[in-house]
Length: 304
Figure (cartoon, rainbow, N blue to C red):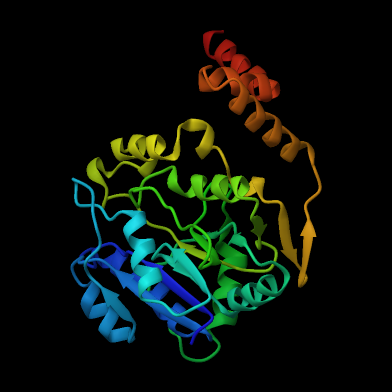
């Protein structure tokens, strides 16, 4: 029995670049110890990729009216087809290395109910990875030289004990909102929200949005509005990695200090909960007056 089961719903393997980065990602997962992998969906080329990499493939995922997989169905299928203690939903463009498993093992000893997340490193990838030799050292060197740490506004994986997240709404994958709700849910249930950015190099392979209608980013897609509704409104999708309560660094779980940025985040979330009937920009202007003044100054500069 493996410690972790990764599950993901890859895009079709029809676009050469998307196919390449997904193959890089899945291959990296299969090289990790204590790991099972489940690929979900009926997308073109997925069954062949699953066979090639020797991972489990489950085609029948529930979808919305537009044919996009539902997060709730993915979670259910992962639970039913895994014997692991821990589950991890992950985007199919993310490369993992052994430091990921090492971080998970440390957290598991320290907390019983938690969600593990991390900022990612964005990297342009134009060729398949050669996984022979010391590929990890080579990739790390490339990331350190060419990669960029993504801002803490989105999460590309969530790892958690199987006992957590039993009641997932019918969120639509690949659209905004559901990942923020995952952090909100952990706060609501008093699970530890742990940021492992200092301990893990999580590599996101950059890509465009040609797979989405109109080639628009996921946050501009109409299905995002449905995710927001299912999450219970805007107030419940304002949570980001900045709202983690702990950080894994140097093998230790550290209680995060209340910096000015984190204080502003907490103040903003409190205002949104109390004054839920006010427009989003009003709350933001109260919580972040400096940002508001900068906006005003930009408007003045344009007019002058």
